[in-house]
Length: 127
Image (cartoon, rainbow, N blue to C red; front, side, top):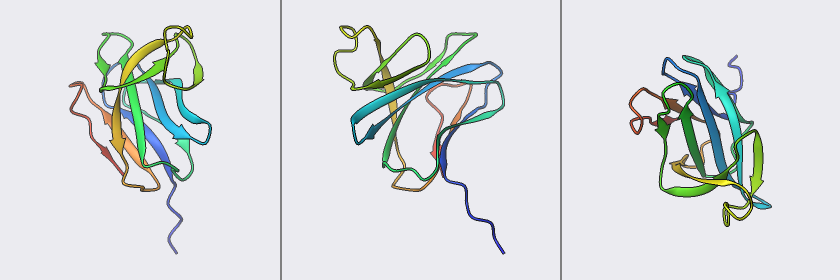
């Protein structure tokens, strides 16, 4: 008998450095961004547990040691320390920073995984 698949949104760090990760998504109360997950080298972290409820998720990550970034062209708000922010407008006037998040189209699959590599921009998501 097969065990049920575990559904979630995970990020795996394929680099040799600690990476900080933030995620953005649309919820009932509007756009949300959350961070920071500290993902050590060669490990994975679950950012959203359970069946994914949205088709699109947005990711921003920074290499803590070398300062490299995994970015995209979707602007969302982040904070210096741990945060959960509702809304993506007026980041600066609300005391936040604005960063470019990369969009991932999960195709409405129940789970998704993003692999961060030493070559930012080459990571791909998969279920």
